[in-house]
Amino acid sequence: MALLMEHQFKQLPADRQVETRPFLEAVSYLPPFFDCLGSTVFAPIKADICGNITKIKAVYDTNPGRYKTLQMILEAEKEMHGSEWPQVGATLALMWLKRGLRFIQVFLQSLADGEKDNSNPNLIRVNITKAYEIALKRYHGWFVQQLFKAALYAAPYKSDFLKALSKGREVKEEECLEKIRKFLINFSATVDAVYDIFNRMNADLDYKV
Image (tube, rainbow, N blue to C red; front, top):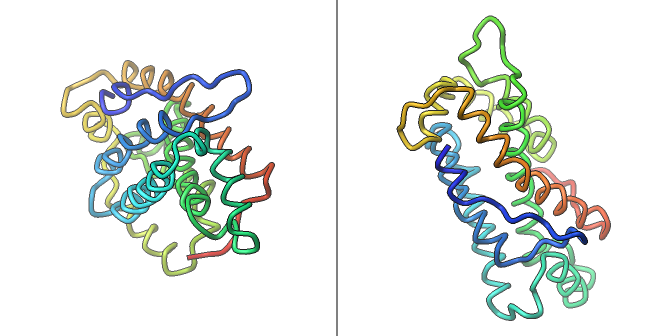
């Protein structure tokens, strides 16, 4: 659990604005999460998340004052790019990044809620499938969906995943799940707030890759 707990997300302020710099700092520690699921299998999602973080940071670094919050980035880019927006710049990168974050959120919440395959309780396919179907499936074409189905069979056992999440330490399952629940409090609030920004600004796109 050390992988997540060492870099907690900040509690959001009352107006639920997501400050860009702390957000980027927190999400930059998440890509190794996918190594715990099997580095080769989930490498494309990990690479997408890394690439999108880099793109958002590049825009933020050009003017940290102007881009202090994620909403300010979207508003500025909408003004700058006109009809090309939202399919450009940091807005597009954040659109895909939030989907990867939603995948992590739903997967961890499913584990924390005790959802499992009763005939194979040490498998995490049920949890990963739920996360994929909610967060990513609708944006993937047939070929990518087939790759994901194949990837499921290479997913680790729950016990091995939790051990990897704890950086190789042997941990009790319930102790680890309790730490996941704590991590999810600020993480889920942040992911939900990013989705709200996109909904308010009508910035989401529904195309498939």
